[in-house]
Amino acid sequence: PALAHRARKLIAFAKADGYELRVTQGLRTFKEQDDLFKKRPKVTNARGGQSMHNYGLAVDFAFVVNGKISWDDKLYTRIGKWALNAGLEWGGGWRKFKDMPHVQLPGLPNYKTLLPIFQKSGLAAVWSKFN
Image (tube, rainbow, N blue to C red):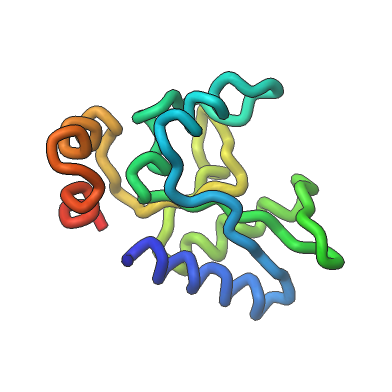
């Protein structure tokens, strides 16, 4: 619920600035994550279980320009300001791997903390603790 609320705020900030955003990915299975990990060109450094998407704690956005999704890199630098104002962490601000369309709840623990909770009690347990 916290992520959904903040993602809607980010979309509203974009709209106020004259941009349209669409959620392209939210919750992702471990298999979907592994499939993305294998893709080339590289789109993620995370294997199944290592992404905040696998725990429903991250969202990817795309810009809609003239009714179509645009992956123009110049647009994606704008997400950082909106994410900050919405109380989200932006993947474009990361040092090692820039993930420009990605936002997630701030202050999340490493997947090594989330994985055992998920394996033992499922998403509801993860969300009750970190959402």
